[in-house]
Figure (cartoon, each protein chain N blue to C red):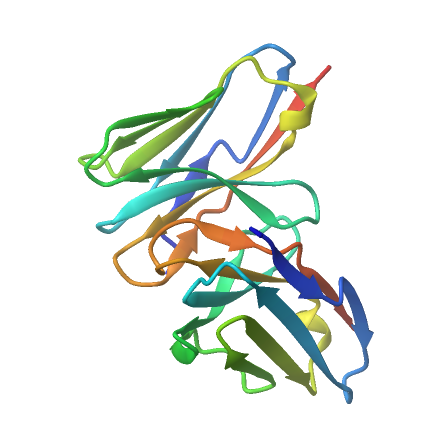
Amino acid sequence: DTEVTQTPKHLVMGMTNKKSLKCEQHMGHRAMYWYKQKAKKPPELMFVYSYEKLSINESVPSRFSPECPNSSLLNLHLHALQPEDSALYLCASSQDGIGELFFGEGSRLTVL
Amino acid sequence: SQQGEEDPQALSIQEGENATMNCSYKTSINNLQWYRQNSGRGLVHLILIRSNEREKHSGRLRVTLDTSKKSSSLLITASRAADTASYFCATSNYGQNFVFGPGTRLSVLP
């Protein structure tokens, strides 16, 4: 199984809602990532988890809250988002944090 | 800060032609990788080249790395319409942070 699965594929939420994005991999990878991508732009790193511990937080606003319940799962909790947070949110995993990244298909988020 | 910078930003070619994309970066790296992204989809890993390698091939892909110039190039030979996508380089500098360049949008016309 070389897949990274993200749910939901699409999410529309109001600025007062609380929602979560989910990511799952069963490749035994030790590093998991959240990236944010705006249209026609490259992915921008948000968070990195290594061995289930948060190792990198790229100064992301606290309205985004990551969680790694176990080595296969990664969540991104969303609260009080702004319309400018609308983007494609990509989850990725890596065997060792240095080599190839495996990406999910992304969750397209629209904040109204 | 962003490391990789792709050139050109957009490229349009005919099917069967070769496509060359370039990437420049600013600091020392452990490896450089190239990814493809079809519109609105996730990124797919194409090839990884380590800092001690100068050239690598994978099928119709050829990647070169010049660490003295801090640059890399991706060559796609005999392009197909299915190669239409955005291509990103990403650098890893010994940490866990993969930094992506702005990307090249490739259009292969039938």
